[in-house]
Length: 353
Image (tube, rainbow, N blue to C red; front, side):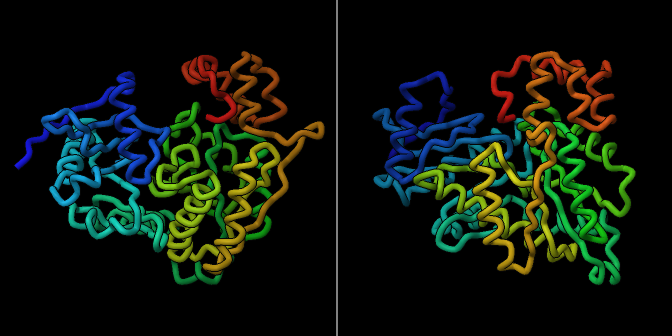
């Protein structure tokens, strides 16, 4: 029986990373842009025969050379990555895999959350993880038999940070429903940390009645960290993400009796505009209406969180006043905000984070 050894592959090791890329390409997978850690399984001859990577608490870019499949090598990769994740304090793990590999990963202790038949499966290592998340949402909603009779809607927002544009979206959505659920993305890939974003959303809308606040948890992820390595081009990535997002949101909506999802129109990002368009096609199939609300403008320009971050980057705190609610403005004037402002000033990618 052949002997193999497993080892970490630092990003700076361009030679070994080139081998990883080549192996992935052979198996029809692209190297994901979002990776924290990569490992490789090597033969005695120094050939890379299997690889896998992590990003936060997800496993990604898993592949075994077609010449060595059936030898149980993926089990070794998963075991190694799981041990690494546990060392980092991540015990709730997720992975995306091709639909054809679903049964294999089920045998390794992963459970299906949602699936696009024939394409991608989103899985987790807890059998009741998503069900417990839905239970938590229901508890937060204080769900009663009456709630099914009320018109309920939802907004999912990153709010990086919370602006007058976000406030306007909430106000306009609330006019159309009895109860509005606001889900704040708590994946921390943004320049403004989740705890701050969540607080500013709550403080900036506390005067509006019948709003219920939730965290997205690890289930509704951002476009920035959606795994794109299965798809051949951006159009396929958009299609897969939209379908997965719609499938997950549908399960949430069914539990909470949500019939309408609200989004702002997107004059700045073509990707987000296409995403909204795709959601318009997907959600109605599940009986959920998607309503696109025109963005709030100032001097003919739609207000955006990226514009607010740009002003913070340039140290123009006073100019925020016309773009953000008083609660957001007060936060960025406080001593507490200095660390966040410093990270924004240090960032080179203001527009996307």
